Image 1: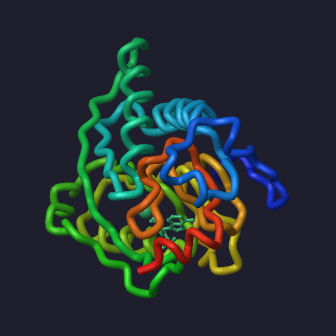
Image 2: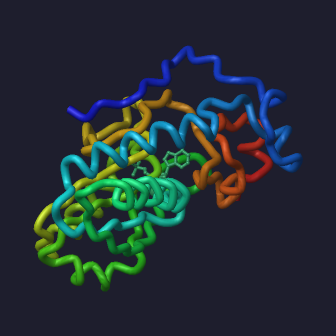
Length: 215
Ligand code: IMP
Ligand code: MG
């Protein structure tokens, strides 16, 4: 089973006042739960683990937009650094897919994949799907079944976060950054109705903000 860094249910996190948080979000957040620096350090290690397993073959890194874009960019930077500084290196190309399954703070039953036509170009390739967070697992299972129709050579999934929740289908990614409590998280490209992507740290949203940004 994939190893991960556990953020416990009773994790108190950090008060906002110790970090730089945009003024426009100051009243919307409960606490910082994963500071940006820790995200980066864990991502560096995930890059190493992935290259150890998948290295030697051309990798197509598939970014699941929009939430995955920060993690994708930082993970690829670490993989690039490994490629630049070791005797062995592996060609890396990128692709992007957009998936939408959330409204307010609830996962909906319909998982919409946009940009799916180009999936056929992944036939015969080693694909690394890069996702921000797995909650029920429905999004990833939908994406994996779509992808399998295109006959890729290998598919691995890396998710920065996995939520501990009774709503989980039991699906687990191949690589996991952190396992997190069952709260709604924002920041580092994770959003609440498109807000909070412009926040560096991963934070817990407060109830007041859920109302304020509701659609
Ligand atoms: P799943 O299909 O239930 O696994 O949900 C996966 C998708 O829901 C993720 O790719 C996110 O876009 C979104 N999501 C789930 N939990 C959160 C959260 O706590 N904050 C922000 N987005 C979330
Ligand atoms: Mg996502």
